[in-house]
Picture 1 (tube, rainbow, N blue to C red):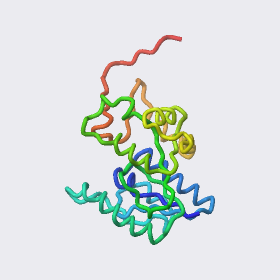
Picture 2: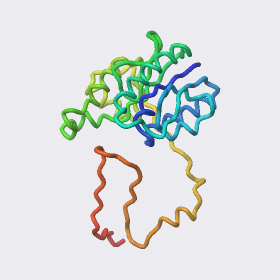
Picture 3: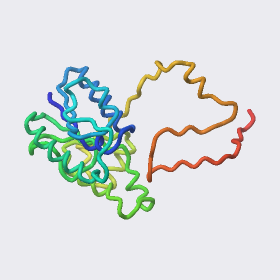
Picture 4: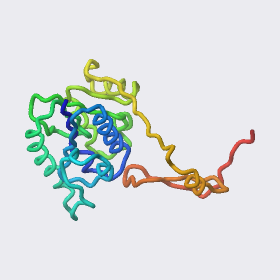
Length: 219
């Protein structure tokens, strides 16, 4: 089976859980001897470098040229449509939410929904945030929807009135980090309680660390 993954998530972020999820999914599909391609014409994603040669249809950039970010998504869309039409996949898995797909009409489309935070806590987001609207459009276009939990599936069906027959639950897996050397872990330890933050979440998740000693109950 020829399975295509589109450019969206890989052209938005360099690192992130969603990106790692798709790359690991591609690796497992390859291990099952499926034909897989990631169509990300001009991306700046770190994880795609880990895939075997020939799997990624596109070029990795250190970053997009200044003031060009808004142009890159439609450019990737245009180039992907041409490349996917030539490859002619049996199914496409979209990696984020968009108004239009990249595959020719008639090819089934799958999409994964991780949560319904934008719908459950709409008041917490800017009125200009179109994530929920784009999500609804993408889901309405999809032939099948994967949710990562039963709770997310129930929220999706309730908020979007999506046909429950096309929604299934596939729980996320995990990576084996046993290869991490013990001395690397020990070097991170400290005598006092601490909070460790990894990653940039500009405008989405803000970490505020208050320099107040943490109190633990006595056992």
